[in-house]
Amino acid sequence: MVKKGDKIKVHYHGKLSNGETFDSSEGREPLEFEVGSGMVIPGFDEGVTGMTVGEKKTITIPFAEAYGPVNPDMVVDMPKDRFPPEMELAIGMPLVMSDQNGQQFQVTVTEIKEDSILLDANHPLAGKDLTFDLELVEISGGSPLIIMP
Image (cartoon, rainbow, N blue to C red; front, side, top):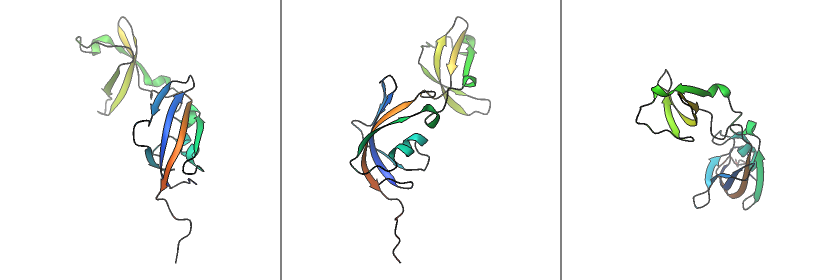
């Protein structure tokens, strides 16, 4: 059974509450990670804990245990004159911005107004409950339960 510290491989199919797929390992190698190490969202770690190899199950992760709520402070109304005039902007377009410290982050164009562009720096899955169909493929590594003298 999967426990914290185990390295596992899992196939997954991630869906939003409306049934739309946002990610899947189909046609790729299974996702490999160490349980409890912070490599995946907390609800995913909790969802695989206790599974056995070959087991399939569906988990639902509330947004608070996934990518958190949408933060309105991360939505910025940027004047159009801050963009190159030849740049063709479209709703849903990802862009990379830099803050005053030179740190880069991704934003998404969410609205094009007459004089400004609305940019959202929230994770695209923020505020969304996620459902995953899981299949545990392998458990490897991890610490042994019994240590031989």
